[in-house]
Image (cartoon, rainbow, N blue to C red):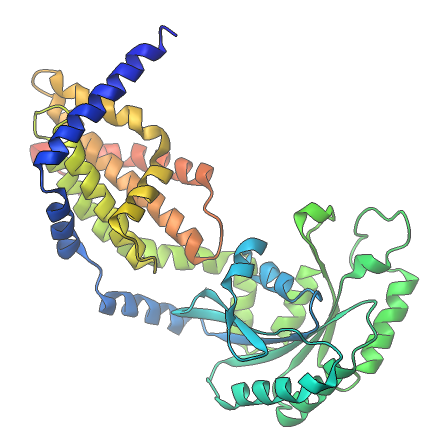
Length: 421
């Protein structure tokens, strides 16, 4: 209790003083001005996206299968995106199809077109076929592949078979991968986990041969997979992923096949992150220099609201770069979410200004380094969102701490004109 009271008192004093200052400063005007100075133009974003498109070609995968046959799990396996975000990412495409674009609409490395509600009712088959044929007739120029998904224990596949036949007849040059899924449903009793791949169980072998015979001459490659959720308890979660990757890549042109391999190796995600971060750092540098200049004012706590507005503006700019348009209040929420434990240090930074002679220099260096670290954290946050992943708070905090330590050295002379940048 004795340790808590001074902290509460300090935070209350800080809130009171900064609140009074905010009433007197044109924070909204400052935010708008900074956004105008350092906004990322649509042309600049387009240039970044075009550069990535040139290096990483697009593949369109048409997922053809009944519900609950693992189509969404295939998307998770290839992209690394969580089940929740994959579910939210589908967009209606036609009456009977949906689309999922990875990592973003503006940057379609992979486009998944999923047939929804496909059952054995023949009254819908002609409609589904007509929609898929019309979609294929648009000739987008990207590599295309059919992925037909069948559960290992499902032999009521008449409508699926009819759709596959007509698509292959009309577009024989588009390769087809037959993915037989949900293997664990035919595991022998008391089998608690996946066996070494490929599984060698009599029921699975027999069913697999029957499914391949049913779809004979309609596919180019076939593969056994069982992509589950973590809570299902099977290890690995993506059983047969490497075999799936190799069979899929074997059906694609070399550049597209390389992209599939890079996605599973997470090379592409890192490459995309680096491209965006390189541009983001130009803006982070400008905001950091301004933060140092403002923090050098030798008036404890008076600059906190202005710096906060500046940092909120920076996060808004970075969000726009990553395709996330935020209001100032939303950007402020992101700052609060990722900054976390830096609040106490921020207050300490302001109080050091009471030290005669060099307090403001220390505060300026700290502000620049913290603004830079906040920018690095925001890049990780927005990068995860762009890649369809849930931002990892621990990873963001780790990145911020590392960036802050490195930036302290970089910005230590920024307030005295001896800037090393």
